[in-house]
Image (cartoon, rainbow, N blue to C red; front, top):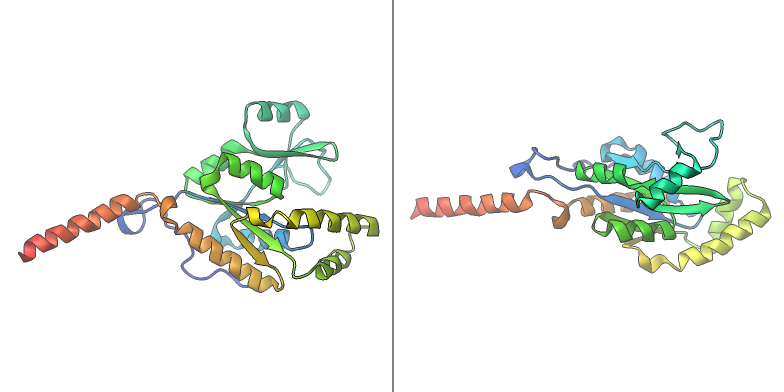
Length: 235
């Protein structure tokens, strides 16, 4: 995977023309299992030039020996999870195999207010929840496989699941793919590098949106005032 294109970093408050800053955004990637969202998420998150922060979920399931607290998950008990949910302090949550997972709201809002971006790797149900709470800050991307046959081959090449599990994942994929119209952007991942380049383009464009750029109005007012002064001097 090649690095990000030059000039993609976002202006920070106090830097650049007229101190134009930017409110951060949440970049959400969703896809059926095997279509490539996790690979793309890791690729752009690990490219330091983009400055994306991975969302760290909380979970009630026990920590596995290979997992690090605060890196893979934040491990909490059921009582703490229920408290977060009752106070509406979770942007999204779900129960999976008897364990609960969720995204704490306050750390995300703090990062956005500081003009930094976060990336989420979640399904369409989680996407709906996040969008309902922070709609203006959310950019959603759905990753499609080039074909169902290729999706099956990718799942089989991973050699992680039994044939029965693969069939279940493919059945789930058919349900998930039907949600593609709920997303802002759709990328067909027939080539990983091309998909990564498309993702970079989406992020660059979304960072330049007028509605996210704080101080832009004041900067434009300054330009117009300067223009009026120059016009008066000429007269």
